[in-house]
Image 1: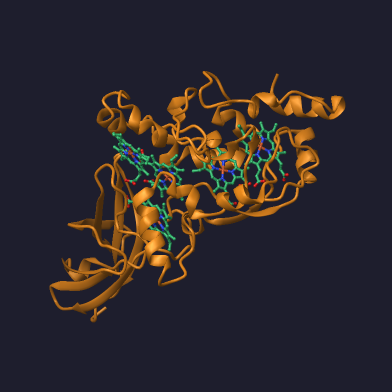
Image 2: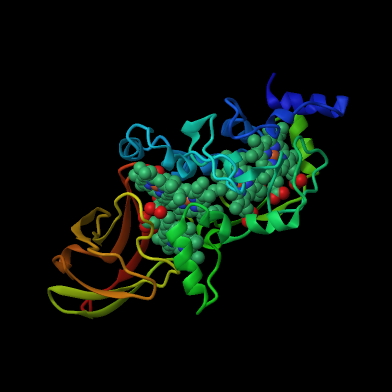
Length: 321
Ligand code: HEC
Ligand code: HEC
Ligand code: HEC
Ligand code: HEC
Ligand code: HEC
């Protein structure tokens, strides 16, 4: 039976077994899949699916470096059980889901989240423990695995009030926790309160208007070159983390009058910038008559997909334009 249909049935029976969602230990061989959570938490599932967390186990690079998953030490972070548990354990079920819903949310047989529940109907237990709730709302949760980054953030926090990890990496949205997918569930969801929440999507650039990212200062420009400084204003290294290979690079982007882009000049950032550090760069200007709009775009290459994402674009004009 489809889940939405089950919910409607539950309303009539007013007692129904969803216990398989919460009655599960990391050592069990089966457990709820992300897709199952996603049948009600539609948006959260769609966001999570696009993240590196969802690829943490299936990433070809991880498979290779963990000797085809043979290295047990890697699994707690790449296919974790309950991250809030005092004992760090890998998960035995749905390993290919990497860092999945139950890893972060299922603790002591109930779902942990920072928001107060207010729904008419909740198919699974929701924790009321405010101590755990506040961990869910903190950088500490992320620090369980992002150990170095967390340490960097903690050090910077001594000098300046930076947001939490999620405060930057999850854009703020207003929504109910679940989404109606048919007539009955639409009615149920209509009674659910709307919360101010943070998206599960972790990459910043695709979130318009965020305005978060390293600063770029244009220093001088002549007929042939542009000199600029990259400033790491983040509370962690750029790039951060101690695993895998990191690659950040600039592309000098020249948008022509006819709409075509010329972006063949790639400048790789040669070393890690620690928090507050600055670095100077020079790019060669393309022939100006070809360019209508110029920008320097900062990209990050994602090892697990081989794709680059735009971190931030910094537009500039030449003096005689
Ligand atoms: C049949 C629908 C359904 C399924 C399946 C389901 N949930 Fe829920 N979930 C709900 C409803 C309804 C609420 C309560 C919403 C409210 O009170 O505003 C909720 C609340 C939550 C919360 C609480 C958020 C907070 O901050 O209080 C979390 C976390 C959560 N679910 C995670 C999960 C996970 C993880 C799974 C899969 C293992 C899952 N849910 C499966 C319907 C579902
Ligand atoms: C259970 C361990 C674990 C926890 C907890 C965790 N992460 Fe991750 N995170 C990972 C792993 C592993 C990767 C790398 C996966 C890959 O690239 O294959 C990752 C990748 C990322 C990335 C890189 C995104 C990208 O596209 O390359 C960001 C950003 C991130 N995590 C932020 C967070 C934030 C914010 C939190 C807290 C809400 C968090 N993580 C909690 C394990 C974790
Ligand atoms: C002030 C905002 C801000 C805060 C707070 C923040 N980050 Fe970031 N983070 C960024 C930006 C901007 C990037 C660069 C974008 C990118 O690399 O995709 C980034 C990049 C990352 C990356 C990708 C690493 C790479 O390969 O470049 C990870 C992982 C990450 N952050 C984890 C964290 C964790 C964990 C915390 C909390 C301890 C945190 N961040 C706090 C803004 C922030
Ligand atoms: C890396 C840890 C992590 C993973 C993996 C994760 N979540 Fe969350 N989730 C969080 C955090 C942190 C919050 C609190 C965000 C906020 O401030 O609203 C949250 C909030 C929520 C909420 C309540 C806020 C909202 O968006 O309505 C629901 C429901 C939820 N998650 C469901 C899921 C589901 C379903 C999955 C899997 C598809 C999932 N989560 C995967 C960390 C995680
Ligand atoms: C303490 C938690 C933790 C452990 C243990 C861990 N990782 Fe990771 N791993 C991460 C996090 C977090 C990231 C994302 C960014 C970063 O911090 O480098 C990551 C990213 C990676 C990446 C790059 C992303 C990708 O998928 O291409 C590789 C490769 C990787 N880890 C391999 C391993 C291997 C191999 C082991 C075991 C020897 C291991 N990791 C153990 C937390 C962990």
